[in-house]
Image: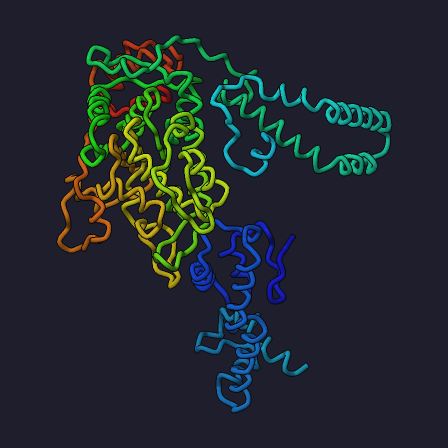
Length: 123
Length: 460
């Protein structure tokens, strides 16, 4: 039975320090820091956690910027560039690499990922 | 009662230490009804399915599944238990499944390794661990590499070496001296027989009326596999489940002696008031309440330390894991040293001589199998390596190494190796006659026991 924490369901059998990475904005380092803060050992699974521990974790997560808060922050940063009309904003809009990479070959990642923050703005 | 223990994943219920031969049968006969219901259902539905072939995909009958579900939880429980019982029965008598496909193990009769056996004349003879002691070892569990060897041979046997005779002599003297004078660490290169020597010492103590605390795998205490929590008052970290399981093991093995030791004074641990009890009941309090298990353990060690009837042996394999950083993290994300954890710290206090048993010995064995847990401070204190002037050594660890005596182990002598290769030949793991291979294997492995064993078994 997966545990629902702040809108993300964490599967029961996963290790806690891996399951916490399922949040947008938490990677392995911050997950490890969270586990050590609440004295959760490395091989603890989600099913082993007590209610009070889960509550403490969700309280801590509420204080961090993750999930929708983070996404909003990133989007606002990019929209700021667009709004002031600088070079970075134009590159984001066109879906080209922003940080000065070559475009005559190899711009695949930029083409894939760079427009998405602005698309949601337009719709 | 038995079922409860197995289901909650604590060690199997060894209520009395008598080896059981047919656990599986007795359990099945206790619950015949459920088994009778199970088998005809499945067999009848299978027959029906076979007759119906003609369609491409056979359909599975859901009513059958529903019926299994309603009987459901209890039946699953018995299935798990019966299979586990069968497993336990089979592992106790044989060592591997699929016995129909292997030749039966050769029947070799060995003498039991009683304490009288450790004399200079018996160096180079092979003895097996006595039947009465094997259940006690099963509670504590064998060290890893040796358990595989014992499974292969279907009996637990060790060779008496010159170093084991010396070690047992130390133990004999230790039975009349306080443990501060008998703190030894068995050291040597990889595969030289440190764990085996420690096993022989523990076996000696178990045959005699000593109280034995044996930890075959100390690395599991520090590698972040069991829950831990901070105690604000002391600033240390307790490991409730681990302490509880250790107390259970101690109680199971030493039950008859602990009942005779009464507590000298009353104690109070959280909400438990302990008065006029014996140590066995004290351990029960710790087992039932894991959060007080750590304090119970400390009080228990103090009480058995004060008693003068039974000497105490505290034997820890892989002791170097307690003298390094553990894999646990502090609240502010720094690595904890092992002495910040309460359970290793109590054991280290006895190793360093800060606390002692009136009569008894404290013996540890190094282990180089787990590289992250090799302890530089301990090796420096024992004189095995030089301290590097560029790398500082932790003082908190060094304070627990004062007064430890090194017990060095060398490889096999020629007589010991000859006895061992005779034994391997009798147990038919040696592929060719022994005379051809002995000199070759002995020279190539330079008498290192583990390499010698692997060379004889799998070839060079």
